Amino acid sequence: MEQVDHLGKIRSNIEKCIGRHVRLTTKEGRNTFVVYDGVIESAYKSVFVVKLKENAKSPHTDSRVSFNYTDILTKAVDLKLFKLTS
Image 1: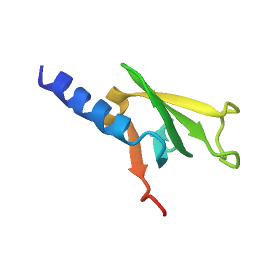
Image 2: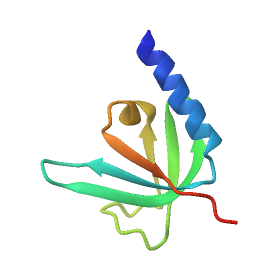
Image 3: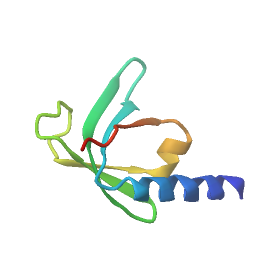
């Protein structure tokens, strides 16, 4: 039950950050990490979507990637939020 509460907090925090620039780092293999730079575009019940920067170097050709909140909870994805610039 406690894990569900944490997921709700993670989701509400991400919903507050829609439109903010983020960097997500995922572990893809034993010594392989993939870094995504983009903007949080939307948040849904189970996932959130990040629109990638055009110059982002990633193995995916899509302009958007999605992650679930459990990835953040289990630290499978590291999310870094950048400061707002005026």
